[in-house]
Length: 200
Image (cartoon, rainbow, N blue to C red; front, side, top):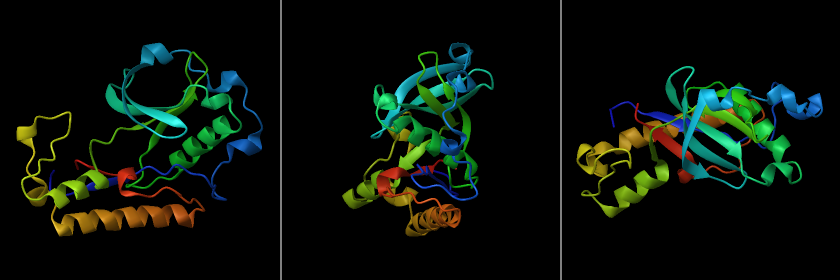
């Protein structure tokens, strides 16, 4: 990784700030408000990057703009159980309103042709704090090559991540959390696996 790190912290909001839009106060949104008639022409959805209890994040190409992004959608069947759809909308709106360099920006929100809720966001290329710490525990010879790159292209963990770099990234994460807290948003699942250090 280059010498400057950009830490990215996705804030799946479970509590709303008074300064943010709460989609639940608007009442149920008609399905056509979020319908994306050109979804198939605009987005080329790829492989799974990760998944949680409520959603799945996949690689995606936004053909309209010509960039790689990530798309998060409600897991099949989850959008119909209880308030999963409302919670998903809330997460997208709150994350989209938390404009901070260390919080992943949201680009779009809608429903695909099957009616599944989704939102698109910046795709962060890098490694989780968890992976970095595990590699450092294993010692100097551990390669941190990402799956998208050849193993020969990445230096070992100890040379790549000095204590200073890691502490600088950690401070950036703390500032992002403070920024969210100032707006009434509590993360509730902060852990090394949910903090990603981007390439830049």
